[in-house]
Picture 1 (cartoon, rainbow, N blue to C red):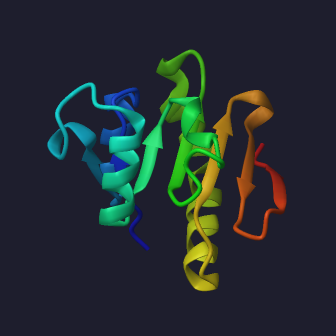
Picture 2 (picture 1 turned 90 degrees about the horizontal axis):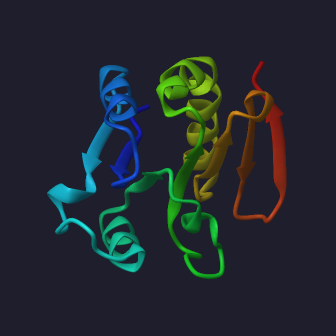
Length: 133
């Protein structure tokens, strides 16, 4: 199943290129909006076009401010390790995406380097903590 992502300005190009090679669609936000626009403008485009926001900007995790968008917030430092980490957990994220699609849930994930742990939230406001070692 192909995941369609809106690449935020803070997302490393190497990650977008790797996801494209894996068969997912990654659309740079700068193809749809002028550079430097607000998060609210990005949210509006993502919602209108049914895109998952791929970003390193932690503000997108704010469910009160952005309750309707789907997102994947990545917080991995140093950023040159980002593809290595994604290689280890991409199957988990793809499975979570398929589950959300099958169950009518929003795809919302935050990925950190902290012990290769991924936190995945669903619309039911439950948190599932899944380690991908």
